[in-house]
Image 1: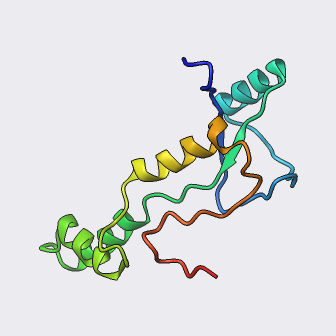
Image 2: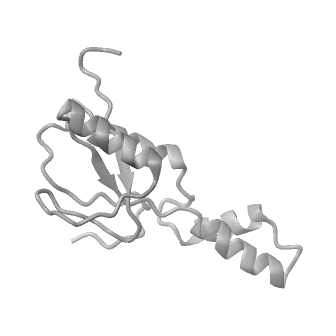
Image 3: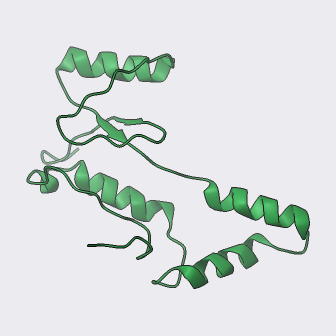
Length: 125
């Protein structure tokens, strides 16, 4: 690992977004997260809390495919892409690249932001 690299453990929460300095009481019950938090506490290090919504496109395709068995997943991606200003559905690694940047020293001056990784779907003011 390079000197400038560091590992930031991530704790995913469903339907929760926290602002810097905010707190939320958690009930940690999964062993992997208990270990992660214990390691962070032992090393006096930080962890990140993230909200990643995944699977919604495949779930909507499944519902449409039940009604029309000829409707393929490729058909679904093409249909979804038509509604996206950039003309395509995003890839998981695109979100991963943003997460890695935010967890890196290069983002040390970023103190709080909402980044929409949605191909231009969200209105920006």
